Length: 370
Image (cartoon, rainbow, N blue to C red; front, side, top):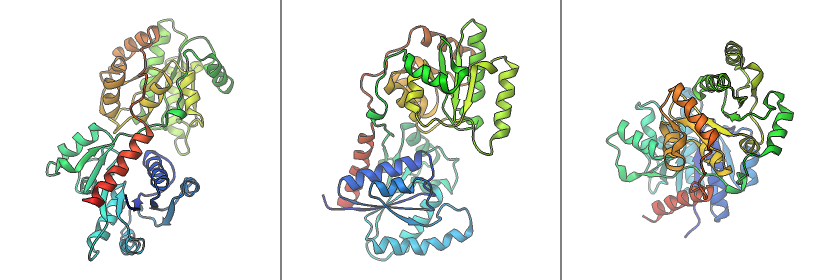
């Protein structure tokens, strides 16, 4: 297979699933001997991009302003200069700019690939994510959503490539893991004790279901359990009002001494290992649900709302953890069952980083060879 030049387009290299997937594909391309270029406004992940052999071109292609249109000419020039084979857009505005740049090219132009990372509100603006010659969907939920919202889309152009994890980063850990629990309790004394630890990782937004987790904790403790709840990621800059709201809620249901709300943890694998149940209670259906496969890989049961990508994964890998969305009573009942009889996690996690990388490169080669 000949050497490819792949240009990925995204708003910035700060943090998040889009950025993570971008770096993972850069790493795979470079390891296979290809050239990997990323166009973005830059950010704190830029050193990681360069460390794995990627190249960066700094253009603020995610800024929602008419001034961003000036980058169309720059992108067109870049595609010509590097003799790009593939232009891979991972976000709506960068996708539009890449699309316009490609349409203005004379002669042979690079192939256009998009990845639909989320369930964007349907609109003409969002429809660009379904216009790639290949549209990579991060889950079956995303593929079904795109076909429902944009019925003129050719289903043959849509391919499901789920996100994946590095199994070495999430090794199977015996349960209970008292050493990990003790380390977490040293950091957050509210989590000390012999009762079960519930973990809900997620940024500080109502969409992540923190209120549902607090209500679940209150119900469990009202039934005599010494359960504790850790919510890493709630503490964020400019989210102080939301944090105060959650603190008031814990006081109202008398669980303030059993809850730790913190900044994101730098060792999420340790957090999973220390926990007894991992919660995924997003109020809005998510496209995939990486938390599910990370926790199950370590060997911890997951309890979540049965919708979106999270529901897909739970029904496939651990159906005992899937609960009718927003049914608090059913959530408590299922939590008690999982705590009393933890289900067996899959012996082998099918959603791996290597599988995702290889499947993406297969799509690139298929386009170039067509």
